[in-house]
Image 1 (cartoon, rainbow, N blue to C red):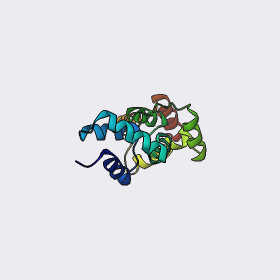
Image 2 (cartoon, rainbow, N blue to C red):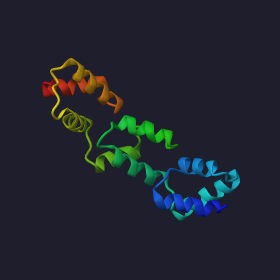
Image 3 (spheres, rainbow, N blue to C red):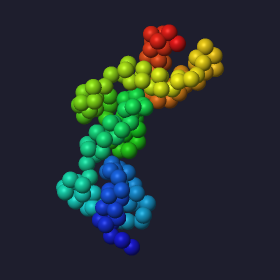
Image 4 (cartoon, helix red, strand yellow):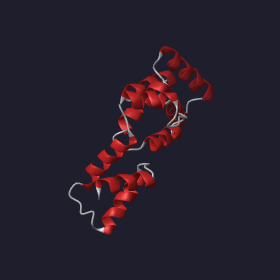
Length: 149
């Protein structure tokens, strides 16, 4: 069997991972808990594994299609506990010049291209799609009224 260190480096060479995800993948491969903990510690010390770096990249990648609330929830599932008010999240949003209203507008305009929103069924589909992306009903309704859709 390949040593856990080599397997972890192989996984990290493919893509960035959160500590939680990397630990889970190594456990799934059958490595011992103690060995995994040592490998994760060493990876962090060398700067190969960073939950903060992973979270920043994940937020930037997910922003065009999801609300910040949903992104924070997804990060929580990956073992990184953040809220929309967290300093890390605030920094990334500031760097990206993010506003929920403009993001919601962008997602709506991408989604409605060529669709007839006078059809009630299409409007409901759009609302459902946007809510699954983490936007609140109130924000969606406000933006839709503003757009006169």
